[in-house]
Length: 144
Length: 144
DNA sequence: AAAATTAGTAGACATATTCCACTAATTTTT
DNA sequence: AAAAATTAGTGGAATATGTCTACTAATTTT
Image (tube, rainbow over all chains, first blue to last red):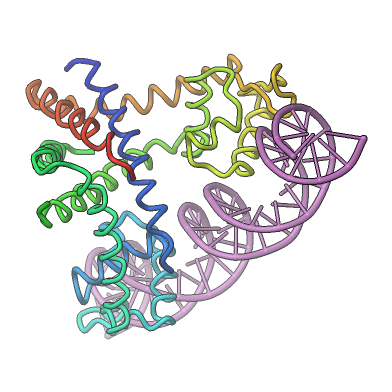
């Protein structure tokens, strides 16, 4: 393994971190913080998920997560239903308002990405996402 | 431009953000926070840089940056020298201790990346960094 | 020379995040 | 079945992170 690969990957990490940082900064005009958005996303993707399941998924502190969820509950974005199988945990679901909030975030996020992609030619887009897929495939198999 | 490109790029963003997040979490065993590390890096790369130059580079609040630099100065990691051309600003340089601290961070960061890459075959590494280079080239030209 | 701008700092403040101890529910051990 | 150990989620303190405003001193513009 060539040592230059290491510095190339690190350069890419810097580049991409900065890029995503810019997107996130634009994004945070809404009322939700980044971790809040991710939690909302997790509940949207898997209705009935518990806090305990979100923790490893998002690598988020359980106490911090608890506070976020309590906030969501107060704002009536999610509901908690005591789990039938384990009364210590709650099943989380989006309310209609929560789903709406999610959709707003989702659309905004798509819009930012689209604004970048429309600046490229069709073949460039094609090649870009091809490369991204390949990076995901290759790195998806390594243990971090 | 196909709409699927948007969702594919967003999927990649989620994937890569999570990956870098894991690397950063491992990384933060040292005494420096993430923004501190970036500031140290910026001074290392460009000896004599001023706070005002770091602000747009790192998209960091000038007051926040000022506090970081003052902390670095107290810990004797950087020195401030009044700029010859403008006495309001300071030229920043790493001390020997600062350089050492930087090198520790730098090596740690390289080690984590290397640990991932050694799990891949030579051709996979080659393809991976090739894709990363291409992503950087293509996205480097778009306005975010 | 006066007015406006700029670099960096200080302090108050808000928010984000971590840490630890706690409660209640559950599982394991004896 | 009772006791002990573990687990899910919560509360509160402590810390980190980041923002905002106002300030000082230096510089530039008028």
